[in-house]
Length: 330
Ligand code: SF4
Image 1: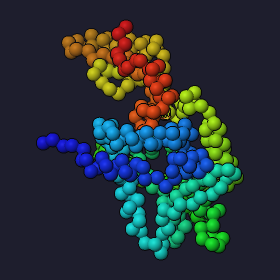
Image 2 (image 1 turned 90 degrees about the vertical axis):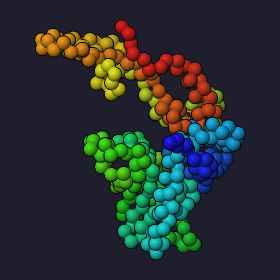
Image 3 (image 1 turned 60 degrees about the vertical axis):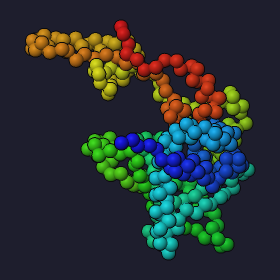
Image 4 (image 1 turned 180 degrees about the vertical axis):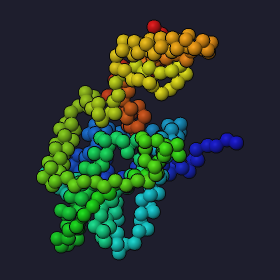
């Protein structure tokens, strides 16, 4: 039986992808909270190439299909938010957008759910299981929720001075790629849906953070896109490594930054295996170690950034990366 990615889902995902509340062309005069905490260069790429991306999706079916495959989980995000809409209105406030001026810039945020009975503000993310151990990503989400709390508390939502008491903030994660076997590991949570309490950032620190982020966005926006790019952190850069692995294996026994260190470790592990087998005289073939070269990688550029095909920085760095993963024969 042959299974295919459904055409209707391809179209649905492409439509969902561009269903933004804050238009790309208002950047940087108006910045969404999500964009504020993210890389300025990505926001610039979006502003410059959103129409190019739409054209490419409309004119290149293979690209459209790959794009939908990569972003399939947007459907889950939409589904989760649709379900939340069913929460009773007398207790829950849902998905209200709030704008606030900071100098020349408007910061715009939409919170997911505010529980008027428990005074709790919650944000829902459909995300990878790796988010639970990604401190940088979690920190960004914590700032995002704190900014939403700040907007909710400082902007008049109606005519009066309405403000909302918030005693607790929760980040609720729907882990889209958790497998049954992950639940028995120490690396991941035991459940597909988990929440974590978000600590309150003091208001002075938060306002400083918002203003600093705006300043970074505005100053990066002035730069020539052809001579700029995302930082290593924003590109999820990992340097080249030398992995000591069993022949035929995939998981590294040790990851080394230096080739010489990895080769010495390989030789020492192999010598001890050979010695042990000689003593036991088992006559079994030895399962020796080898060293695998793993090139440096800009993970976000390579697999996650939807504007990578237009990005001048990506084009330049692609030319620099010639090498592929291979076993070192020496
Ligand atoms: S391809 Fe990489 S450098 Fe370019 S915008 Fe995307 S993440 Fe940034």
